[in-house]
Image (tube, rainbow, N blue to C red; front, side, top):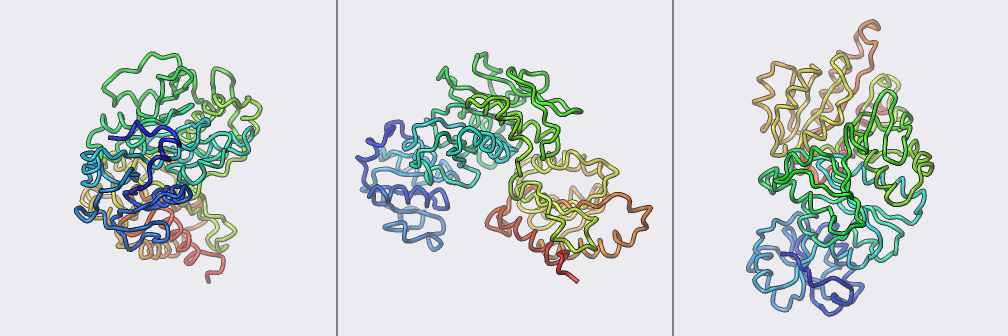
Length: 469
């Protein structure tokens, strides 16, 4: 489906009229790049009224037959567009070249690119890898699915690029020629599009470039539980996991590679899953030429990602509530991600757990089993209350349902004021942790997880902030 004939800037210069299918940040970034080359750019989008009209010579609805492909030389597909979209089918019939925004960026950047994918942890690992690389390559760039379109910086001549790549982007980008790649893990997600775990795994597998003997690929061996083939034997394929040449040990925390043993006892992010993310990042940094000393010196200075298990600073909280830790994990958009985040908590830890959003197509059983272990109150809002409610109610554990996040936080504050803060000192030896880790997509109530996370932080400030009386 995707063009293998447009491989260089000179190939692209022979094309004059482009249709971008699906706007958003990646579509708009591609349009900016094409505009700078003097190309005619048309947008077909589900919500044409929300488009940045100044970027396009024409903005259309993406419903056929309103879009006429006559005169279109190339189509740029946004990753959220389904493969069977009628405009794509029409383009294939007319033999119009189709590119992804990521591939368009690769045409303009010929330097080294590291690609990272997986169900969970890819944003953190991408940011970690970038953080390590900056020690040696101050002009390094980070982008892709992490929120910065590749086309927004592909002509800035960075020394090296780190891309977070979703399964959708990998499905759409068959010719990335990555210098190194990583597949962190695989769990049930995006099955509404991929249908099966095998299909999902095969999309992720497209990140590797083992046909190039210089390419280095790092994979969690559990990934191959879902592929139709066994673990390939290849000198440039490296397994990352327990008892592998790239591995993590705890107590004390160490990361082992064939080149070095790293002391990660002062690494700021907690939990074995974060040490695994760091292990992948270190492996990729070694491939990029960093010395063990350069890597070791960077390990204590990583701040983490916004909306990924971030504690709201205590200095912004009213002293009355400073025994309570508020965590914003809005980036958790599936159960597997949420469960990874709370993996370090145990039954005796006082927790209020907040879930919500649109659940993915994945089994709820692991959530219920973990909830039974923790025996914590569960607060559920939005679409999730309809999807999960019946099964959650069967547990007999405390669960509370809300239409929106504001009403939920109102109830949380009431319970804290009337229950938690009135407990005796003896009973209240452990601090309460309020964890906002939705485990569902944000689109029922918000534009994206960032807006959702910012709303949660503003509600905590409104209800528990230092100016609250």
